[in-house]
Image 1: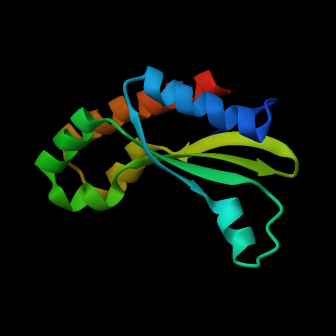
Image 2: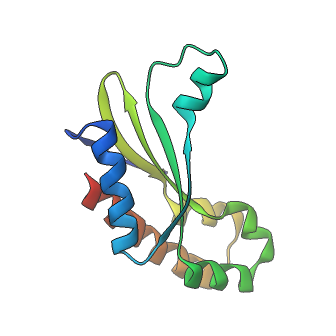
Image 3: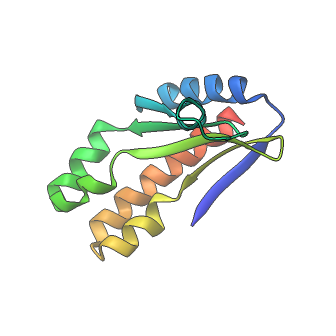
Amino acid sequence: MYYVVETSKSFEQASQDLEVAVKANQFGVLHIHDLGQTLRSKGFDFYNQCRVFEVCSPAQASKVLAVDMNLNMALPCRISVFTEQGVTKIGMIRPEPMLAMLSDNADLHKIAQEVESATQKMIDQAK
C-alpha cells in the first residue's frame, strides 16, 4: 500500500530534489504542508521533520474526475519527505491500490497505474 524509500540526503536536500523531480515529470506542486513546523508551532514536541507535497497532473486529474466526480476527495496525490529515527525517507500511498478500494472501474485503474508509475519515478529521482 505504501512506497517508501530511504535516502542518505538531508531532509532539506531531499525536499528540494523532490520538488525538482515533480516538475521534471510534468506534474505541478500545488502546496507543501510542513507538518513538523506546524505541530511545533502549536506547542507539540514533534522531533521529526515532515513535509507533505501535494502534486498534480491536470491531465490525469481531469480524466479521473470525468469518470467519477466523487474521487475529487482522493486528489491531489501526496508525496512526503520525512525523518524517522534520524533517517530521511520519501514516500507515498500508492495510487493504484488506493483507487482500487474506491472504485472497480477499469479506466480508473489504468489512470492510477500511470500516475503511480510517474510518482514512483519522482521519488526514485529525488532519492
